[in-house]
Length: 257
Length: 273
Image (cartoon, rainbow over all chains, first blue to last red; front, top):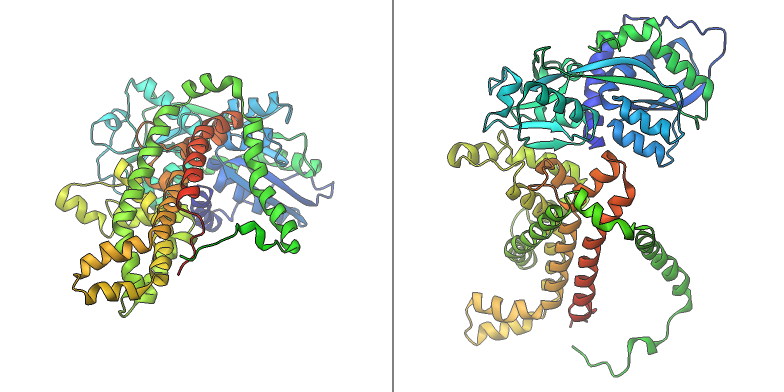
């Protein structure tokens, strides 16, 4: 699954890298000399935005480097509480961050963006999906995230809001896997984030969800207690929260928290 | 088979072999012991009811048996063809047959989409002509399991057929037995040990299969969610390592009982003539 996500990430990074080279860093921490590298655990929906931000940060602070691990927030949270070393955790839901905080691995997370759901269909929307209710029609093949990960839980909220019961064809471990299944055209639709549809470009066609039934998930970020390079970890969190960081995130389709 | 008047152990063990053998055994055995020691024995009941345990166990066992039967029906003839016939491109075919052994199983799952998906090379015709859709179905996970497991059976049996005594087959043919009769009455009985070994290896691989099944099957509880898929979900997505080990215990128990029983009966290193 990580392999799949990584491939999708690599392809989309290439696209976003070309299109967003204009935004220059507005980071103000020029006084301290940052160096070294950190590992950032981030929800897979942050793949494009964080990769862009990482490149900008590195340009502004030569000598720094980032290793990103993009996966479902639940997987990352469980790896952190199992003792895997990382410096920063950015989660796609407050509940996974709460798990990490309760385990004593992080404190004082800050909400930095929010995200809403969108229906992704293969290019051209061959099954002619128009609303959330269409996803419940018999014969419609639907991919969703597992209800235990943020994108699955948020999708379930949308179904509850719309008062529909769906029978998914595929139950994927994270949002990029759900998107990847849609991209293979093996399903008629997938429930992903607005940001994923945007990042996928022409590989999927998005179907907007009416705001009356759509649901939101909040993204918190925190420096982890076991961070090996606390200065750089804090600088990264500050950068994500800065005007320059928010600009990139909003351009990728995220909303303010 | 030659008669062995003395037990194996009396031939004398070269002492140099003992330390690496002990380390090798420890590497394989200690994690299994750790699983048993760390398993939440007192909470097994609630864990089995909380996570869709029985469905996953049933799907795993049924799927692995179906995979084994299909692999045997298709793989034994394939092994015979690879061992006994000559044709152009045979070495390529042999390489292709062993490819799933080295392919990351996730790639196997994606390859199955490209082959059997509704836009796949073959899948589009299955869809057009018969209305069949293979991905995300139980037949789909059986095919995924067969894709990754059958090579173990083919490779093992092919080795057995190659080292079998052709003199017996020729004698039977000289005595008027048909080709099919030679195959079924002489070749197959003479390769029984490797036939059994290949079948068991295939089943063992099938029951542990995860990657291709997860990608191609879609992880639907009660339908395509096998035990290995459920265990990874419980560990990673739900963050519950104790429950993950608890779920895997019965499958381990089944596998160990079967393998121990079969090993004593069939898999004893049979000296090939």
